[in-house]
Length: 428
Image 1 (cartoon, rainbow, N blue to C red):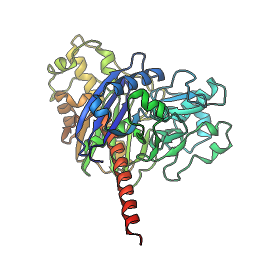
Image 2 (cartoon, rainbow, N blue to C red):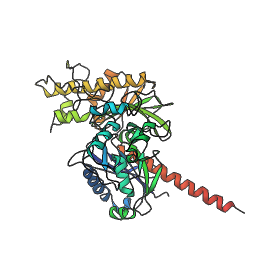
Image 3 (cartoon, rainbow, N blue to C red):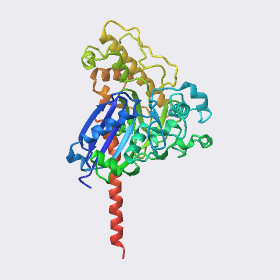
């Protein structure tokens, strides 16, 4: 057991990252690969996973005994019953306002799924696009199914915005009367054992035949697991999207665009905006943002009032599929424009923490920041000024967070085997 390692696979907005941890949670290996065709292409997810796993040094790969996968919460793909995608996935940031009336007939207002930007709305669009029978799986659940060669399962956190109720441990009653009910996964808790990796798959990847596949979580939750946040700290993930998370003693009151997960036995509430680093990449293609940021004085106001969304529609802190981005006027100075965009992102973050507090989360006294934006000192200073709390950065990748779930499951199995062994030796 002391030599056993755990693998985490993080399927993000722009690419895939893997991480290998030992029993002491030391990060032994990490690597990443960007998507070639984009988030909507399941073949791209698969190609990146295969490439990255095969590139893990043999001496580490041979010691891997468990794997867990996280993915973008809400990216949904329709497949045939054998797991073969029927087309492109619908990414998490695609709203389906034409499905809103039907969504409202299926789930109660205020629930995570009761939104044009929820997975349920995307599921209804996919059901219209493809003939049945089919199955609907989120990004992480689809890759876990590929590892098992069994697509029956879905992890609870990835399926909250599809309608799964953590408190009731079931799908809404209205789902049971739908012809598509069988398209939904069997839900398993985050960190639970899904099964043993398919033998042919293990051979293809050069992995052990006794490799455990563990139910993972969402990419944002995986990032949180790496942060080791204290009870008075909130967690902000500054990646392609802006995500806010907060551990709470009880589930939050329901709010559109927000959700409460259960990770490692603790309640984790939060929300995710459609804004984030992807907007900056679109506005400054091929430009070194670190160098441009050094030209910004974060203690001064830019004078710009921008709303940096990647496209039309927002999920959190407001749930509005028609909300339009404000990306103009664009000043001649790129540094000033970046200053205004970072302020806009920081205002969204500030509004998000206010929203979570209104719903019952304790106001954070400090923030931990993860993701690419955590490395930008000017942005951190600007956020501290606008939000009004100290901020620290964490550079551990989300893949290491989901690897922790695999590591914990591995330890639990070892403890159970040891306990059973002790009981058998104690029998008369």
